[in-house]
Image 1 (cartoon, rainbow, N blue to C red):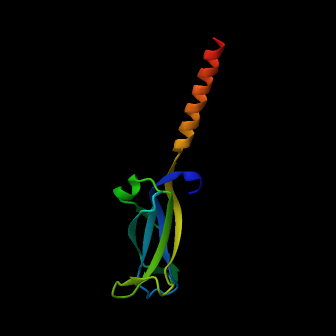
Image 2 (image 1 turned 180 degrees about the horizontal axis):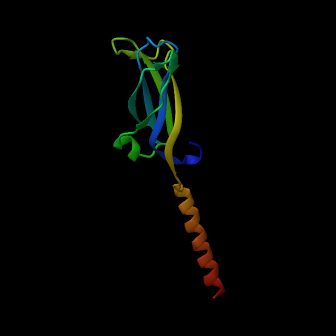
Image 3 (image 1 turned 180 degrees about the vertical axis):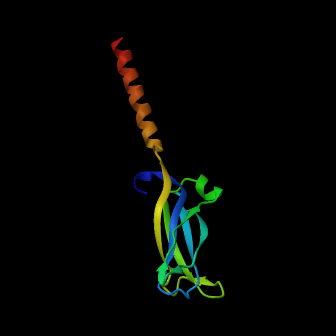
Length: 135
């Protein structure tokens, strides 16, 4: 996030998008980044598409972050999807992990930088000095 701001994540809607109904479900990894460079991630299993009257549907479902992810302030976030094989093994190498996202629910925290407090204090001291000089 630009400007040094942070945000908290709560939930999102997602769907695994694939053209073959025989393909197994996918997996989504959401990784949050802190200002100091450390990370925290959470994995979500995405459902397999369904067929209704000969049409392939990719249902969106709502996913909630666990208490560890939703309680912390992040400066950035990365979302990746993995396609899994029939044994449940998932990987980045096959370029089949396509997904749709909607209704991202997060809150932005407006936390002033320490330099903002320093400038405010300097301004108040300057006003007090001018007022004292005039008195």
